[in-house]
Length: 87
Image (cartoon, rainbow, N blue to C red; front, side, top):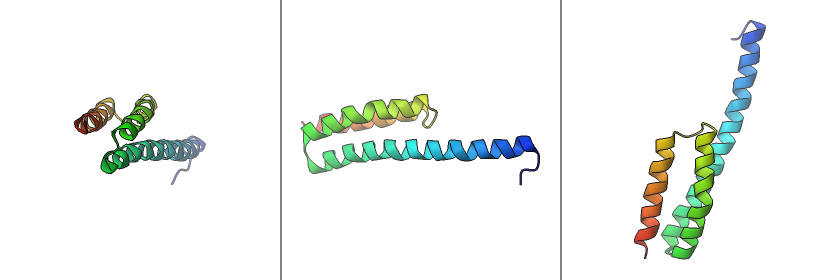
């Protein structure tokens, strides 16, 4: 348990940051799920559109420190190759 004023403040900051990061991660996962659903439905146009919408969200997650750069690159690469394979 935090005892000093500094430790209490850090605990409050950590809670706030955790909530913000959780919301960002959830938002990104939603965009990725939309791409997955479009791929599963077999609609290439919808999958392409969903992928285009998901890319900036994923990269924003990298800038904000929610995801590692390589993780985001790997996810984008795998999704785009799956969308391309639909042709």
